[in-house]
Length: 318
Image (tube, rainbow, N blue to C red; front, side):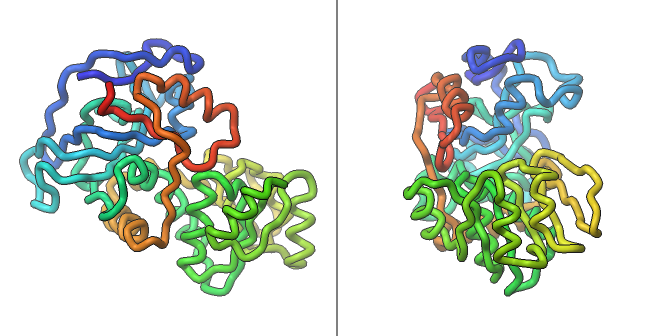
């Protein structure tokens, strides 16, 4: 079986085609023949060594990737019949697991981590859903805002930010979204459902306070502002962070780091997100599709910034 992995950590150039044994599903597991994989910022951490000791116990090659879309081609014993061989699915895994990440022709995942792919959606787009949308879902659940309350979002035009806008609107929230000076970004965020667009960059928190003098009750920080976002938040409000930032802050503000790896087996959440994609509540955005052998180019494009949606790797071409 071929995979894209690294034998040493480093820049995009360390990504290479590697050979691995064909994996076999154990009890409660399924094997997915991977068609497409979304490229996420966490893949860069896996490639560059950012996971640190969490990879202890694994031997190289290390395989990045969390999102995958494909077809189930084997099922281990002890499954409940929810999934069948030949079924199109989307699935989550993690590079820190013994089964490795999703940059491979075949992956093993717990059956709980795979759900039927959304009907009417091509698999490249379907591969972009679970990791980013689940990250947002976990963040919104931790905030616990009520319908009618206001959520501010940074990094709104990115993949996570786009899902944050749409899931927040589905929850009945009012959304303030940061926006660049690009007319295309303004049009995109309006189409996604943002109620108010706030210019991003220096002075963002002051601009939010002009709109919400007491501050917003919740802020989803897709742009990694971390502590710089705190002045925009009301006393007792909440700040969702996506890279583990959790420094103490004042005014009773709760810092709520979310880690999608804690919810890989929450099937009900995955199915709900699938259903929302199927019904059009969520917009699945593919920036471009590249052959899996061009994973290094995908990582370079991601690092360059400005990507709208997700770059997807085609593993049928490997």
